[in-house]
Amino acid sequence: MDSFRFILGVLLVISLPPGVFMWFAVHPFVGFWRRRGVVMSMIAIAAFFIVSIAGLYAVRTQIMGRDLGTNAVLVGLGLVLIVTGFSILRNRKKHLKSSILAGIPEI
Image (cartoon, rainbow, N blue to C red; front, side, top):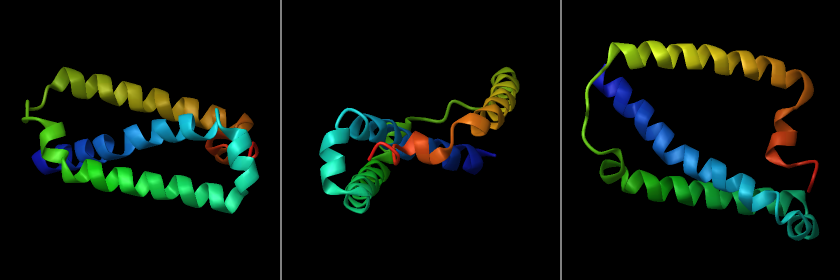
């Protein structure tokens, strides 16, 4: 259980910040990315994403902090939130495709 929590924590810590930044890198500067073209834009953004993940992985132990243990109440609350998130995902996919979320139609 400890290794599962650590792996899940590392995946969240190294992927969420670059993922959020990616939205801010694409949408406000859509004119800049359009001039570069879809392929060059996605290569540049993917390169930043990979470099960010590698940098965050290198300092993962400092970012993660110490292990605080498992709390059954928080596990239950987390499961409720996961089920709610999958419900929202299922409804969102009907109207909003992943390519739109990635900003590809704007570029």
